[in-house]
Amino acid sequence: MLWLIAGVGLLAVALALAMQRQVNWPPFLGGYIGTLGLAAVGGYVRQAKGAPRIALALVGTSIFTGFTAVSSLFIFALFPLPNPLIDPTLIKLDAALGYYWPALVAWLADYPGLALVLGYVYQSALFQILLTIVLLAALARETALHRFLFVGILTLILAVSIWWLVPSVGPSAFLSIPESDRLATGLYFNPAYGAYLRNLVEIGPRVISPEIITGVVAFPSYHMIMALMVVWFTRGTFALLPALVTNIAMVPATLIHGGHHLVDLFAAVVVFAFAVWVANRLIPSEP
Image 1 (cartoon, rainbow, N blue to C red):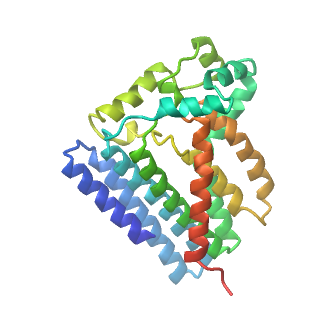
Image 2 (image 1 turned 180 degrees about the vertical axis):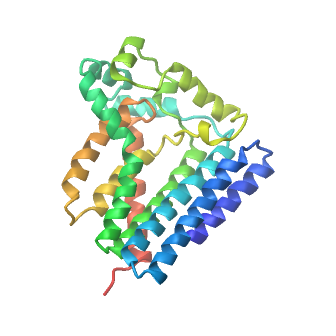
């Protein structure tokens, strides 16, 4: 997996150079070096200190954060996208399922406390991933952790590939909501942000830098994939119940921000299930 991260990182750099993208290189290279450094510390702890569980947590964290870092640069180097956005089609599919994003926001505007909680749940996704890595390492569930990391990498590759072929940026770029509802729910996605996303797709960023990196992969929803990962891989541990409760709440938390259609969540389930199937065959259970 570390070799895969290195390969994707080199590919991201090559793509950015080939496409003549302006990149703020120092922060990205610093992240790459930090990832390798964390993995090296994990290797040292394993060999010299005889602490395999701590080493597993360190190396596992470096793998996840490293792949996240290189994939962010790779994604933004892909802009502008070659195909038109499919959001209008996804909005029609949502309507056929009885879902309409502005209606959800209007309902939630009457419950600002619930909106605040869902906002925290939405922001907890990456933290939950890191906690799961530490938990599996602490419980010496090495095979489960290997599968967890592999599923994270494979699902991100699949999600980005699908999104590149049939791109979407979420309903906030196409549907408007009253400003009073947006303020009542604490949403940080507004019409200007939706226009920014569409501009990214059509023109691309002026300079690729960490401060402009934002979630752009809508279909399928990687937030939903991360929620499924946490619940699936905490099975059989004391963390399952809180993980389940939190990530049931992740469903409305993902929808209210306007970055995802309802269909995005169903697509995430399919991608996740396929990745788990592949992981179980490539990484067999210990005898």
